Length: 162
Image 1 (tube, helix red, strand yellow):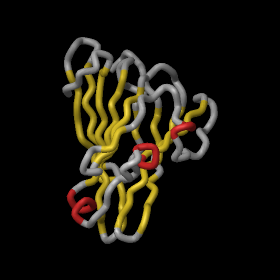
Image 2 (cartoon, one colour):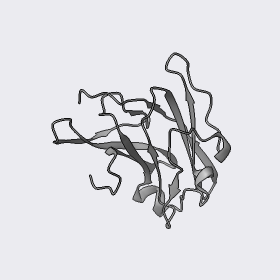
Image 3 (tube, helix red, strand yellow):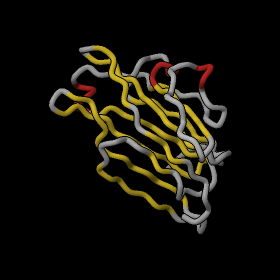
Image 4 (cartoon, one colour):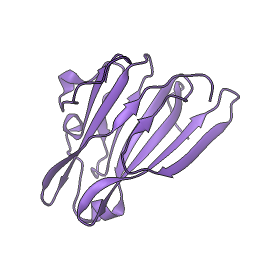
């Protein structure tokens, strides 16, 4: 895990592939510093795209969703406008979050603005981990047959027991 952000305690990478003509999530990889100064990392096959940050140390977490070769090679790309590539919605932990809306004005304050890579293969944002809200995110992917929206969830974190 390398970052120029001294508050960043971890990163999450989510893969999107194209299988049998259908876009979907294929893996989730994570890397986090432990309170003792070590590092924990791993990759799991996960087809729902949900991100669970409940056991992460308190601090900033960089989240990147990337198109795998199968999707990218088929012409799939994230929209060049980052506000159209990812949407977030937040709610108190006691309530389900509303449906995410692709709009800069609706972006939760607890997250840094998203960025899309120059080749439009990935979209990245940073969770500043300042609260214990429940989040839901959506990513939009433009492909040969139009735009597809994938809609998984983020479970908040910020514990110190990892």
